[in-house]
Amino acid sequence: MVRPDHPEREDPVVSSVTTPVAPAAVPRSVLAARTGVAVVFALNGLAIGSWFARVPAIREALDLTPGRLGLLLLAMSAGAVLAMPTSGLVAQRLGTARTVMAATLLVSVGLGTAGVWAGAVGWLPGVAVGLFVFGYGTGTCDVAMNIEGAVVERRLGRTVMPRFHAAWSLGSVAGAGLGAVAAQVGLTVAAHLPLTAGAVLVGTVFGARAFLPVPEVAPGAEGVSPAARRRALLAAWKEPRTLLIGLFVLVAAFSEGVATDWVAVAFVDGYGVTEAAGAAVYGVFVIGMTVGRTTGTLALDRWGRVPVLSSTILLAVVGVGVAVLAGSGPVAVAGVALWGLGVSLSFPVGMSAAANEEEHAPARVSVVAVIGYTAFLAGPPLLGLIGDRIGTLHALLVVPILLLPSLALVPATRPSR
Image (cartoon, rainbow, N blue to C red; front, side, top):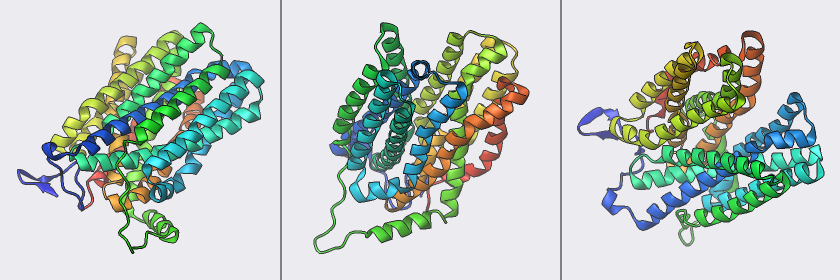
């Protein structure tokens, strides 16, 4: 679908099977679902931020070397990646609301279990099992809530997916902040993480209850069989557009993940700042990303996905270059802010693009999520190996090296026709 005044510009929200809804005609159920999705995204981020805020305490409690800690954290990533190939099928079978509730139950059990095993018992295998369950629930929830977010976006007729991801970022920052407060007041991991897990579960249930209802099957009609759903998933793996979007999301996830895992360490090693200052630099990245996701929706609705994403990717390339090569701490921090702003839209818009057609959204989002989330498995060790040779700060330059070729993938995010 094209806009009459700009025939060459794609509509950033509307797919070939939907029609934009005028703002005045948006039902209350859609507005409630929008709030519910934002709540679920924020609470998912809160759970993950709470965990990472207590990793130093858990490392101390278990007396782990950096290498063993890395292997422990891999259990969470492995659970998430293993969940994603079938998450779309589960969401299609149960509906996104029930899938999110069930997945968050796993998130809460895994997070609480990991906290108890680490803080009260000190048993490493138990923590690893808890993290695997935590990751499996997170991966399933991620796919389901992105599918629901895309449905809400279509019903609203305007871009809102980046704002859902901004809610996730804010939730993760809140989780990290509450974790820091818990550590400061002496609240043990065995108490803090189960309490957080319970709060996340209760809040998510209330948020998911506002999701849009699952379309009912007409009387006498047969639903889609499990075999048909599996065939749809396999078919999605053969679609060139879906695979290209997956590669685009892979680069986006890598660009975000590198900042999450390495930017604080890079500034400590490369610019000689304190650990607290390094953590603050990462905070600057999150702020830049949150601002981009909150305000970028207006640009996407006005100019469309391709020009906006191309511009923001180039902004991220410049930002990383400034952060690494500036030679001045304050200027480098400004580069980090540009980096966060530049990568803010790629991941959520990639998810929206995968879910443009509601009928095929579960299978396609699963495929894109599997491809994209491999970045969280490969990114940390790749940067570590490069950092061993050229230094952690200069290893960050692998980000623009990958971002520039990803410009060729941006046209794949156009709405399918």
